[in-house]
Image (tube, rainbow, N blue to C red):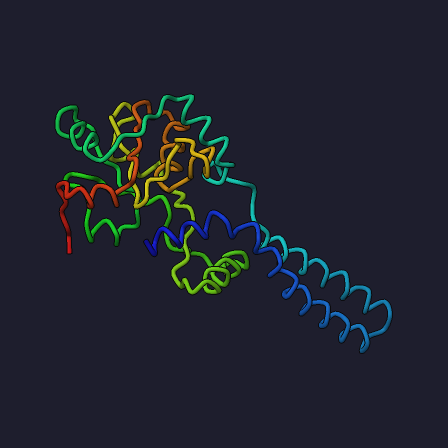
Length: 234
């Protein structure tokens, strides 16, 4: 559950990190002012221009890039999944499809969670990974996670599709699974269902030409609760 909470924050926190950028800008403003006071006017202008250039570079590094497909609005993802006929199946149905119809369960949780427990014969390709880089933007994201007491913040795994393609053919029958599962089914409280890691993964798969993609409703929480075949690597 902790891992899912971490990713839920990943979905919602990215747009709120922009307020961390001005603290970097303030340091630069102070430096430029101090230097200009000790310089002649022409030298001060030159230093100010150079400083502004550095300021813009830092601000650019800490500003989030354009949205990736995984960050697309959930409404658009859901419409695409429904349009591509992605079906949601309950845990027992997923087990039957795995046994009788050669479906593969694709577990998109972090590797550590997969090793703790996963469906028998499932394969693992994590859709999110620990933040690796140390750009200003990545530092800001780490700080945002730390604010919520999470010191292992995650980011989208840029190798997700490539890793899946190395393990599965695009015509493979795939059931995508994560911890909670999410849902495409509308309800009174959630008229458009609820996004999850497995639904994001399913969306990326159909965008990249995978033709037989299913989704595990209720997630692996339901699988484990039902006492279905589970193995551990620890």
